[in-house]
Length: 294
Ligand code: GUN
Image 1 (cartoon, rainbow, N blue to C red):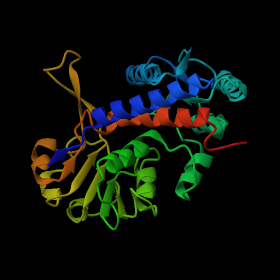
Image 2 (image 1 turned 135 degrees about the vertical axis):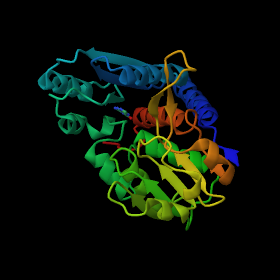
Image 3 (image 1 turned 60 degrees about the vertical axis):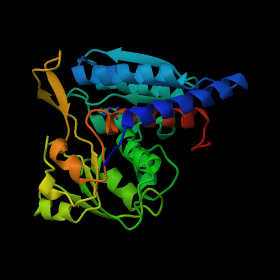
Image 4 (image 1 turned 30 degrees about the vertical axis):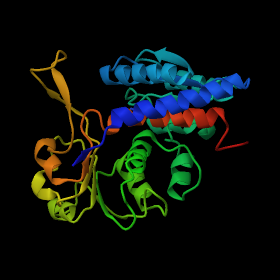
């Protein structure tokens, strides 16, 4: 069994990006600039955004954090998005989700110029991804695909079972895994809350991508010997061992599943660290105008 070390791969990718930024700046080019909008003080969102700002430093990017209180109006938020769309110094930006209930999340996403949508959430980017055109790929699916690529895991003709059909993980990763490309070219089955006999479906899988947010859902009896297991779950569960009083638990019963499989991602340290790399890569592409030239 090989443990897929997302933390090490993520560090390597950030290093590669930093080297490219150094070359761009040495040639007199512009340093990539990412902006992030954070609304309110949700603990998870604060942590994610802090990590994104730190990753910008590691990659040699400029970053700008724009904060609003929970009671910011939708109108004010949309005005800020319009300013960022028009600001030539900002290559890409994100609005950290979730947003407070009074703000229409989809309206906010669609207000972002798709050429600066480095989260890859805009319907134009999602649509381009689904028909295999160059686009900003959203962070988690792109991170999973990159791990499969870096570990040279065979995917052509593989039976791939995706657990979960969310817009930000399940659906896009299923789309990418069926695309005629490497990694991809797999036969993909997506299971969700209405699926029958998920255990039997999983037992046929060469690759399982678990993204349901149910800690320990994938048990050893659901896994074929030699299968590849990608665990996207990151549920906070109480812990007496950590200082914070909680720890992250994946969707896979790691201790019992790991001995049966060929490759597995740990939680934490698997898919998680890769997601920020995808955002950094998209920001670099945005700065280079590598995808949309108009
Ligand atoms: N909230 C959880 N994940 C993400 C992400 O990838 N991007 C944004 N903007 N918000 C999130």
